[in-house]
Image (cartoon, rainbow, N blue to C red; front, top):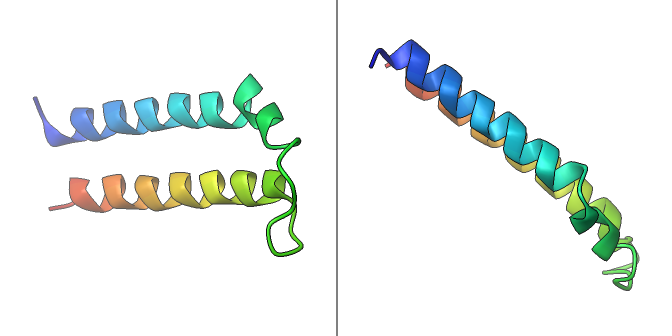
Length: 66
């Protein structure tokens, strides 16, 4: 399988995983968690997932150029 197709498939799986992580009932669980160091846990979760998705997408794209 060519690397370009494999990279596209990985990016698609990452996109679907991000949709599940950001738009599922899992997000509602973080509303009940108390603040961590004065920052709401929901914000930490959302920005953490967002940063992880960006980092993984950059890693997948950079591996495809080798």
